[in-house]
Image: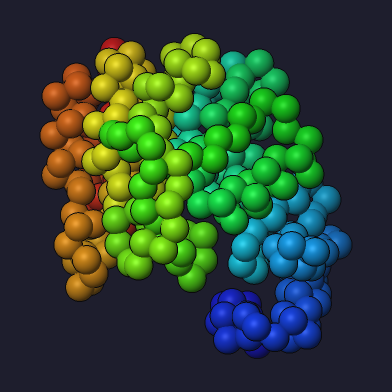
Length: 276
């Protein structure tokens, strides 16, 4: 069975613990054979998937079988495309998910740097904290909040996996705490970030409106807009590219946009910088 078939198989047997364990065994064998190194994928007592390798452990609400090298390649391609992080840098990771990208950020900025990993969904945040702890990463601060333009609570959907939960689409079945990024950073008393990364499934505009002070100071920002989903017939509320571009330009960023890439989502990435 091709590995992509494992993922679909897992979705089909969410409520079947024995089958999930079989999938974990098959995934472990496939990955160990592929990388000629022991890979142990299993389900922990909370029902989370652990992807244990010699160099890293990732914890996810869904089957996760990527290697560190694969995640690192993705981070460099998507989030460090315009600015390459250096040791000692400070990164704000809005929409940190399970923390796989935060692990890469952590290693790039080194022990003198800092990663502020912000994730709103409580179950996904649980995995984020596990990923941080199991890898012994002391330079990551995990924050369980939604970044918005309001203080209080916002509704959030509970998507099929951690990458599809949203504050703007779907059935908003839960309330999560929400803060403005300006206030989060003030309370954490961190220095001005070198890079802010935003990937929050259509809630980009609210996040940007809640970071007015931060936008005046930071030198680099990378924002993933989700217009490509609307292009495919998805909810039009996901069309945030034009609005995000306007906010960043009005905040003084020089923008790199419209990457020439066969992957449609890259058309809607915004990379902003100041002082180049």
